[in-house]
Image 1 (spheres, rainbow, N blue to C red):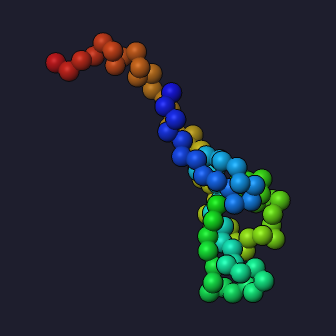
Image 2: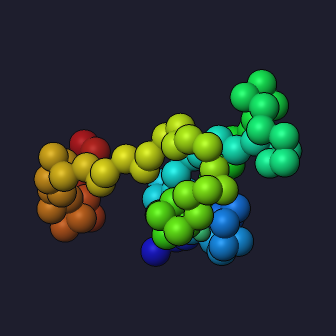
Image 3: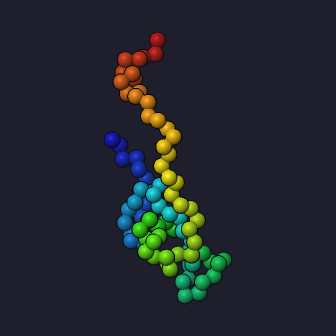
Length: 85
Ligand SMILES: [Zn+2]
């Protein structure tokens, strides 16, 4: 299987996680001087979202729940034998 999963570094624990499991959060550029006009967004893993609540200001985007409405068709077997023509 090809490694197509996009990995992203968590700003909290500096570990790699699949990008789609990450939270996008906003943080103050300067934590000593919280300025809503001087913020940036960064990625946090689910663990740090719970653990480091005081280190980010807001959750901008939560990871999307995995889609379940897409039933996988048993396509593999057919593909080999069904050439065009
Ligand atoms: Zn983390």
